[in-house]
Image (cartoon, rainbow, N blue to C red):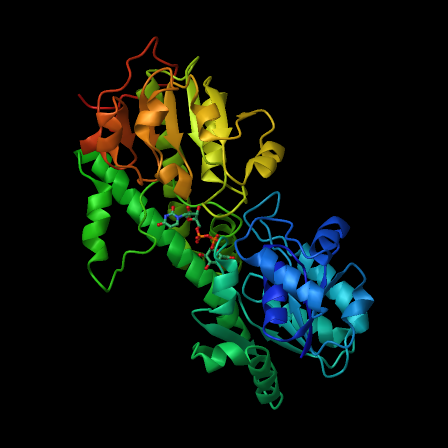
Length: 461
Ligand code: UGA
């Protein structure tokens, strides 16, 4: 089928490349000429495993084109809206200006029987407004809402093999044809048995924000338990493992540590809470404010743990391993790792950050920090090493090799992936978030910092 994809960021570029791979004729439209030029040359403008191969194949075969010219989408039978919906600058609400802009670009080129398909994460009620705009313009094109559940770092896999397909469709006689058209787009996945839920607009919109809110809540629950463990001398990682044995709970998204970041979960829970308040249902999701607060406190607790380990931040040299919001991504939006690095630097530490993929974007987002090309350079003469993003190459670091280059031997694992005993055997003081029972003595302070806390996260003796 001939389709268009409007907005070619993390979501749209992957969606376009996967649809071309599935045999569709795809044109991707974006206002960013630079990104379009990179995509059109068959390359990915950001790091995402497997994407470059798909883009190269699609553009070489001619199945996949990219353009900045809205008229080029004319003739497509389905137009996927994949633009970003970031947090507004002045509130928790979603900024829908890119959705508005995409519609403005699309409307003059829509055919009477085209299907517009919303994929962006939007506040519930947006689809109804989009439909209103379509009708007000005189268009007879149809609308469906088809949220996307891909994770960055696994985007190609998640798009090719989604857990579920959700279609929100307009009620009435045209609904069957809309479903049929989406089924034609996703025929390969449906043949593989991917479950499909057909529903109304609000439920489809909520399907996405409810899932992200649940995931964020699960992570914050694990991190709330970590706070309790730090207060009583328990081990939150072992606690999460006990919970994971219960199939009703499951182990995913119970990872104790620095909390969630990225372009989705943080802004989505805020937008959800703001939208629910507008709808008079604010109480129903008031707990999301606490989910956000617990998540923020992960970063506070990490700062205090590094401070305690260093024996004071001012003048201490801290190597932060990781800048991306999670491994296998170069995205630093709301990155807990980069935020932690900035906070440590603000509190007087000499911070050096490294990351296998995210350095260019990190340097743009936090130009005041020092950056190193690899762990050895970052760790050289460091007092404390902080694991902030659990890239595989950091998980498998050899403590003995690192011991050779550091100034003092201290590590803080904010992602709970290191074997602390292995670090201790190499002579390091080692600590991890949520595991105060395992906290060793710190490195010993020169002078205590202003604002230093002697609470549950301070290393015990
Ligand atoms: C998230 C959802 O998982 C996707 O289903 C959704 O489609 C996407 O948002 C979106 O709205 O577009 P993503 O932001 O790519 O995907 O990343 P996740 O893998 O969900 O991780 C989010 C954050 O949670 C990361 O900072 C990660 O380090 C953190 N996390 C994850 C934890 O702190 N603990 C865990 O146990 C799991």
